[in-house]
Length: 114
Image (tube, rainbow, N blue to C red; front, top):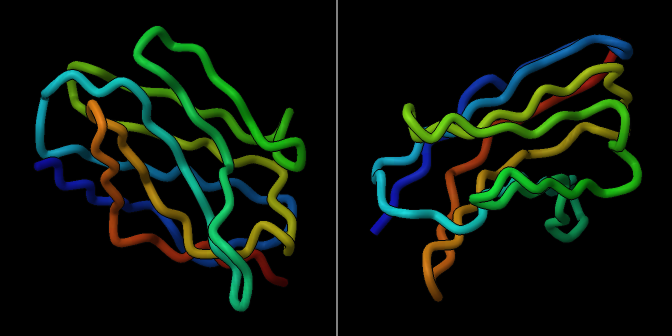
């Protein structure tokens, strides 16, 4: 069992920055970590993923603006979000894949508005 706790969300103006964090309760080997987001009335979509080798992939709409990273010593996943846009407004969820199991955090709200 892996528990994930996100933090760092909030209200920011367009063009601003936020950094999300996700702390994992277990130091077990995690193959892949990721951030997803869900806007009201929409499905949950991938934002970015990073595997245990450090390889990353991003959805096209955030490329060049968001950076995913992981600290394996602190069991923490990060998402640095720059040049935020109103369309980035959503609940952001941390995801971990451990073997054949999928784990989710409770989500953190990000609101981009002037």
